[in-house]
Length: 217
Image (cartoon, rainbow, N blue to C red; front, side, top):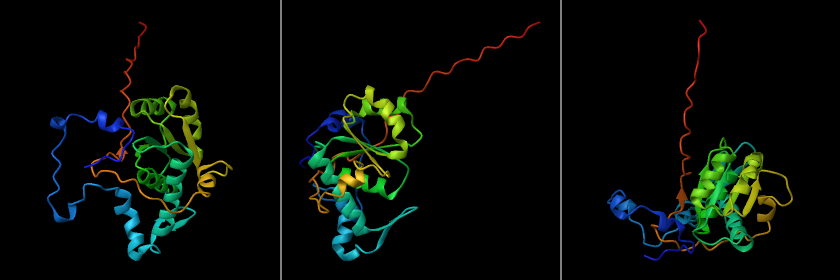
């Protein structure tokens, strides 16, 4: 089994095998090849099998077929690799509410061999700083409406050097820059065991302050 990652951060930070759960894939439908990019199984193959015109994602203002989602994800993957210095294994912060564009970003990251790190829209700069530090985030794709807290976090995130915003109208936003990229992309040949998704590392719980009260007598 050959890893597709160049940046080996995730492999170095996995717990020892004896501390990991036992992974069992006994059912016939759970037999996967050693080399596998899950974006192919979840998206590409449906288009290859002639299902590209079927509805796939429905948002407030748009409706994408499988083929349209595939094309957008491929453009994002090409943008990451061709213009943003992305290498397989890099971690990408995804910041936004559920939307077709966020889904396209997730697929673009995975296609490029990256690790998608989701984050809740309600997180503030302090929490985003902790996530970026723990996961050594290198890139961020952020909904333009949530840009302010990420902007505040950036000075404390030295590894996070590439940030693009989507769902906005800026001339240098993600959609505008991705539109000039090819709609086809050769998925990175990751191993089936390569990490492709990371839950946001949880911040340490804040200390509870005791509320002191006094009663005058």
